[in-house]
Image (cartoon, rainbow, N blue to C red; front, side, top):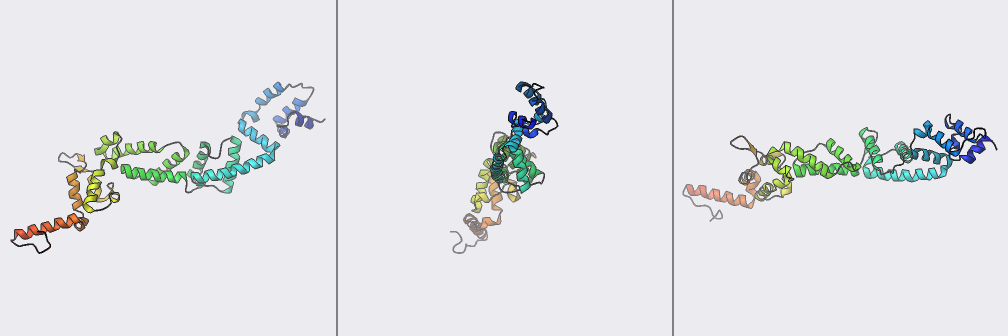
Length: 296
């Protein structure tokens, strides 16, 4: 029996390395009767090689499988590739064929699942570097939820870029919505110091100004969800300077007056009644009676 046959018989999983400049000589020595290697000696010497030290156990096992059982390796690649495509789609990244092939090989050789945190990190890196396109999925859904929460609950207009960073972290499992909420609440305290105490106690801007929105909605006969106190004319509700120069929220009465300054107020039932009463009062000042239908 020749040297190669002896290697294949005694070390079938390593025989493909017979021509490797480091492992090849070790294999030949191991089957050389004049060397007298015991299995323990061979193992000890193998552990000292760069081939062993520079690869993880998963990498070595995958390499051995591709060389000694290629049919199984092909099947595993196919299954992993399909699962990887699904994981990428759910995450929200569009991978091309070359990227799928590369990540399949990397995942199998390093021993992590297609939807593992390590693979999601790879997805994130590809998107961040511009190597892959972002698409619908957990990443974009998280970003949208973050922006809606920030604006709706804390009147904080988060940039698209910052929202995408948070959405990416949430999709990877590195952060939760509670983490984002804590960060946004902290920023809101700096933006709205007049609400800082309530924010520090865990209340949201929306909770603390809900009554103001309802006053405006009632006066203008509109849906309170259509009222945005974070911008435009209604933002005045959040900041009013008192006689000492201190910023405070409007009182309920001040909010009522602000609402009645809106032209839409005069088209409401309450506005029409107020208008009629004012007209009647003016006529009364000149000793005239109001026309029929204008008050009593």
